[in-house]
Image 1 (cartoon, helix red, strand yellow):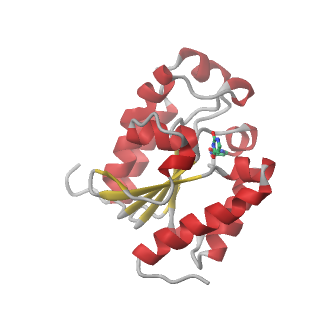
Image 2 (spheres, rainbow, N blue to C red):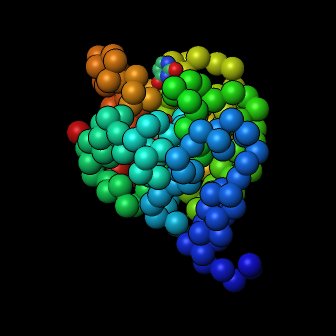
Image 3 (cartoon, rainbow, N blue to C red):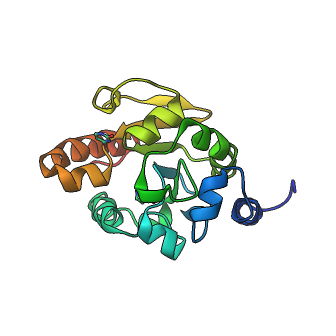
Length: 192
Ligand code: URA
Ligand code: URA
């Protein structure tokens, strides 16, 4: 395994995920697992919450309405979706899009940590409260986690609102834009 490329290592891990039955309910209700997509050696990784109906159907993270908004945010940062690596706290859709349970997040953590270790990003963006609290083990409100960097392994981690929250509450788009300017500035990119 030691001389396998990040792409090969991700592929192997994705095979384990596709066969995973740790969460009995999710393994029974999912159409398929949603592992993650993007550049296996990305310098930025996005972490969302869990697949929704569109992701469960297609097998790709962030392809539904929230994903379309995420694509617009990515474009506004002069980034391309293919440059980033995108995954979630969970790899299976919770029925009815309920929040992931702590047990489910714990069951899936080995896969998330595996993806982080393989991709080895410089920056991780947690989209929404579930991603931020789970990744960082924080109990703080998402609004209070914005605007600063946390550390996870070698990566600098920033937290912002979830695109689904922006669909319900469009005025918060300004806050997300401020957060992205803050992150991109640290990466040496000025956005206007
Ligand atoms: N919301 C998420 O958090 N992740 C997805 O992949 C899709 C919607
Ligand atoms: N509440 C959440 O759970 N997530 C957000 O992104 C914003 C508010």
